[in-house]
Each structure stands twice: as C-alpha cells, then as structure tokens.
Length: 293
Length: 272
Image (cartoon, rainbow over all chains, first blue to last red; front, top):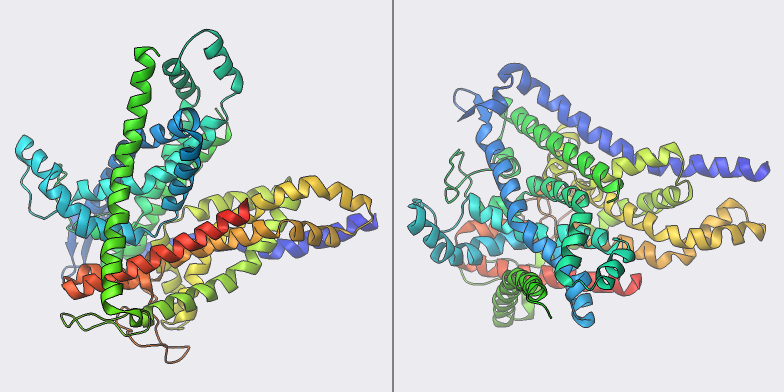
C-alpha cells in the first residue's frame, strides 16, 4: 500500500514535464487558430480558393501555394517510392552483409541531414545540371518553355524526393524485416526464387507501404528551406512542371518577415491549412502502421 | 539462377545505385567546394567575420558561435523535460495519459518547423515583447527537439525496464530508486536521444529564421541582441547571388555536415 502511494506520487511528479508535451501541442494549435481568425473573418475561405496576392487592396488568396504544396508533395512521393522500396528490399534480401550496414547507416545519416544543405546544393549544383540534361530533354520532348535555370516545381520535387527517400526507406525496411520468416522458408521449400520472394513479401506489406508514404507525404509538404531554395517562388498555377511555383511553407518563409496587418494573419491561416493536412496524414499513417501488416 | 530472379535482383540493385548517384554528387559538391574555401582561407575561417558582398572571402565566426549558443541553450531547456517525460512514458506505458502523450509526440514530431517558428515569434516576440535574441530562438529549437529526444529516450529505456524492473523491486528498492537504477542502466540510450535531438536542431533553419538576424554579423554583444546561425547563413547567402557569399556558404555547409556526421557517429556508437 505504501509502495503504491509512493508510486502514485512519482506518477504525478513525472506527469508535470510529460504534460508539457501535450501543452506545447495544444498551445501551438491554439495560437495558430487564434491568429487565423481575423484573416478568415475578413477574407473568408477565399484565402484557400483564390489566387491573388495584392497588398495594395489587401486581397490575399493562397491557392497557388496550396496547389504547389500538393503537387510537390505527390510528385516527390511518386519519384521516391521505387527507390525507397528498392533500398528496403535490397538491405533485407539482396545486399552482402558488409554493404548492408553501410547502407543502413548512410540512409539514417541522410535522414538526419540539414535540409538547407539539400536546398543549397539543389539550387547551385543539381538545378543547373538537370537544366542542361533532364529538363532540356523534357523541353525538347514536350515543348515546355523554361524561364529559369533550374528552379521549378519539378526541381523542388526531385530534391524533396532525394530527401524523403532515406526516411521512407527506413520505415519500409523495418516493416519488411518483420515479415514472418515462414514466408521465406515456404518460398524456398517450394523451389521458388528471389522474384517470388520479393513479390510475396511486398504484397504482404502493402498496407504498411501506404502508411509509410502517408508519413513521407506529411514530411514533404511541411518542408520549408529545401523547397524555398529550389522552387522559384512565384505564385503560379501552371501544369507545366518546369515552371517556378510556391508552396505554403516557402510562401511563409519569404513573406512572413515583411507581412503586416491582415497579411500577417493570412500567413497563420495558410499555416493552419498546412497543419491540418499534416495532422490528417500523420493520423492516417499511424492508424495504418499500428495495425501492422 | 533463373532469368526472373536475375531480373529482380538487377532491377533492385540498379535502383539502389541510381539513388546513390545524386547522394554521391551531393557529398562530392559539398566536400570539394567546402574544403576549397576553408583551405584557401585558412583556419581563420572559423573565427573571422563574413565578407561584405562581392569583397573576397571571410569566415563564419559569428554564425558558428550563434549556432552553438542557441543549440546548447535549446538542449538545456529540452533535456530535463524529455528525460523525465521519457521515463514517465516507459514506466507508465499502459496508462491512458501515457497514450495521449505519445499521440501528441507523434503529431509534434511531424509539425512543420516553419509553423513552430511563426508561433514562437507571435507569442514571445509580439505578445511578450522579448525581442529577437538567443533565448527566443533557443525556445523554438527546444520545441523542435523535444518530441525527437523524448521518443528516443522512452524507446531506449523500455528494454532495461523490462529486464531489471522486477528484480529491482524484489530487492526492496522504492519506485524512485528503481527509476534511478533504470536511468543509470539506460544512460547511453538517454545520451543517444539527446545527441539525436542536437544533430536535428543544429541544422534547422525554418524555426529560427524569423528569430535570428541574418545581418547580425558580429559576435554576441549581449544576451538581448539578435544572434545568427550556420543554417540561416547558408540560406541567406545561397539567395544572395554574390559568388563570394556563395563560397562562404559552401564552407559553412561543409562545417555543418561535418558536425552532424560526427554527432551521428557518436550516437550510433553509443546505441550499440
């Protein structure tokens, strides 16, 4: 009984720092909502549905940024998916042992890399390189007019894809390695080979696959500096992926510093939109990943 | 080997190689450009002030100082909270409160860091009038670090807790003594969690961009003046369009990835 009461006292003592975590989350959300209200009051939902940016008339609509956020997010996930899957399979079932731990360590290091480095490299090295090669090729193929030396929706998506691949592959690697050993044994005892093994295991984890990519998408849409440096920063809704664009985070980073009046609140309203998408995807992915396999 | 198997193996291997190519390109660019600048300028790169636009090379002294100052402060704020919260989560794993804390952690860890930046700006700078300085910037970094290190620490303590908890209680130790014991056994995991948090926030730009000053190219004058940091310096110089500032940014990038890699390797060694 005494032990129990002491345990309770420690429970409440430790609860104070732990509840700070919840408090921080609640505080972030409420400040966000509170500061969005003036903008939503005066401009209504046109913040999300119109494409205008007129500080003179105080008209703001971030549709172009929402468009850019979703396009870069989807595109980066699509580009990254085959590579992240390949790395997860390679590490588990194909790689020689020595190379395996090297690849795991490298990909975990890359997942922890400062994103500003990816962006800086994307702007000054990868962008000009792709501009002369891949982008010029796409240009000649589809006649897409290019107005920049690299910065575009496609460049930002490629940089994002490179950034999220290590993260997504480490999630997939974990799930893939948890596929029951009996599957391997069954495949080999039937005299089947690697092809069947990989296909069977991949179909076994397809739900987790969705979970991992929902999480990767959430991370991609929230990324700021790497995108800001490579997307060109123009409010533009264009199906041409070689055109520059904007995303919500890159719009905030370049406009928040000089925003005043209602524009300041518009920034929070757009951030709120971003957080709502992000939270939705985190919840979806966690639900999928928790119901393992 | 059958043709089918050869196909899948070569398909997967070539995808892995295709992914490693841009990564090699990234490392090559940062290392070659960065080292070139640091070697040609010499060791004063780490202490000198940055150059004026278009006027030769300079150093990253203030940014290096600012980064170390902000990040250490952030770790000091975040460490006690995340260690205690990590202990709570691993000890009272099954309580209702623990699962709601864990849910908040999972949401917080994916919170866009730019949003953390503008919220901290609104609360500390606009509402409380604290101004731009190392403390406000460190607060934003501490919020970014908190969920990372808490998750790591609670994971790291789970195994020692499972192995030693009952034995410790059966020796007649009190709950508090048991916790201290488990923390001592899991100390490597705790340090590992804090190091991972450190590596995460030293490279963060978005949460501090509005809380630092990219033009504060002086060493710290007082605790209430704005600071600057290495990621912020790289970000601003990348956009500057001046070749000499770009070069300083390459040098700074090299320094930054070296710090992150060293911390990462130490963390990995500890986790083993």
